Image 1 (cartoon, rainbow, N blue to C red):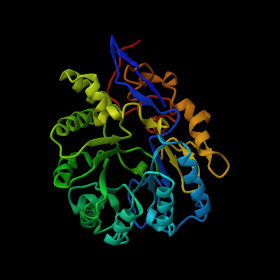
Image 2 (image 1 turned 90 degrees about the vertical axis):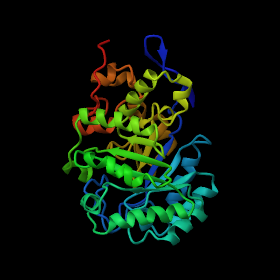
Image 3 (image 1 turned 135 degrees about the vertical axis):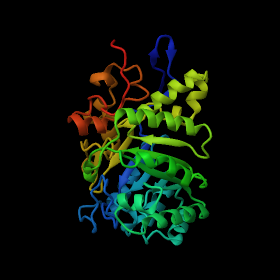
Length: 368
């Protein structure tokens, strides 16, 4: 990977960071779309039964080998779905990935299948961490999003079970116009847990999520300022997904506090500079199609017929989406476009063009 610094404004320069043109930091692999939940925002529009077109075990192992060939700086592999537990070969795939040197995390659904025994098997197989979703501070609010009675209490119970098993735990929370007023109470509910991270996923209108309402740009700006405030004393790191303009807010506030750029670079926010759809992130579907993210339905090709490393490094889709000089609208003239870059998935969902401006960013850059 190439280490670069990009000019932001005046004589100031952004912290040094990796440009993710050679290898992704995060590889999300949707093992299956089968799931017992009925979440209102489901990107995958999950189904009850497994799709017969899923990658076979042999194809899956070949894919793991190819992901490993990115090298030692290759991506952290996140096994997601649907519900990965619906794949009967899940544990053998985890074992295989760990054996060839991959770092593996799992994003299971919070169902009755997620037991203490499962967490023990995860731990014994070398799973580094898991993620669970909590979208409300009460059963009524959470289950109103997830669609299954009883999943609120089960999520909290399984969170503690995962931690007791020695697994690192990330909790994901959906940000919509509906959940926004509840985020403070969700944060208070999570505060006693020794989390690896609290990650807020800002809604993209794809899949079933088309029926939900995004927050406004002004609400997002307020949210990001609030996240910066609570991060000062939070017992765990706070991060965002599909809201890269959080980095611009955090960087601006850190500068105002006189924090040196070297310290900003080492902070959780600084380490995420530049990462966005297709630039540090890659998504592989249950049938092997390769996307810049799970929320951007433009495929570069399929692992059954192409090398996933070549698709990430050299396909026209990925190389184009990484080229910030091609960005349009205010994203194209923004001085923060290298560290932020906007959500390419949201630009596509709103405009039908992944190079357009992110409509959820409230910032208006100076005209160049």
